[in-house]
Image 1 (cartoon, rainbow, N blue to C red):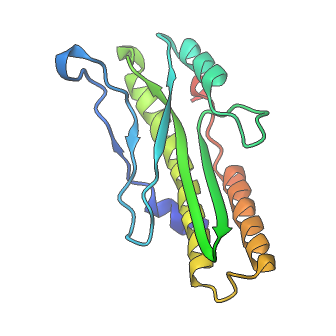
Image 2: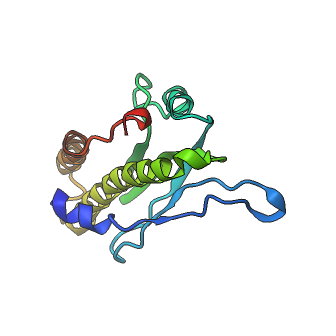
Image 3: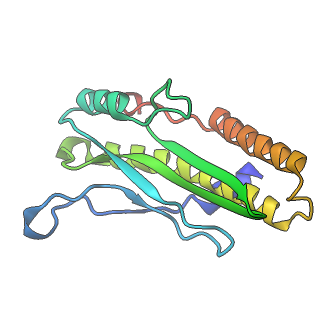
Length: 175
């Protein structure tokens, strides 16, 4: 299942890292890939990082990166998802948090692009796993059963942990 989902998110388009209109800098972020119609596009929430050297940028990512769902650890990128059931309806939302570097020093542009591509691909695979879980809810006749809901949510969390163990993205300064 995970290998199939990797293929779905392996083609990302990367935004231009140049200057915008009127000389304003643009943030360099990957754009969500065009997935099959069965999948909801991923929302991306950038967080700003700064630095002129690899070590400065890596330190900025470590100090500004998103916290995990328990607020204990910071990560370079993070995929957050929420599922609720109300009035007999399934409600869900999710987003990807990725670093955004405005002025990429020329000597590390290629390294930054490669790093961000790998990080975004990893997080967008979490999105594919999440949407597969949502599909299970939508297709099951048991989706109103609380036991089924809890088992499916536990399975979705387990898939996330399995993916994190299989695809480890190194920190920027080790990339």
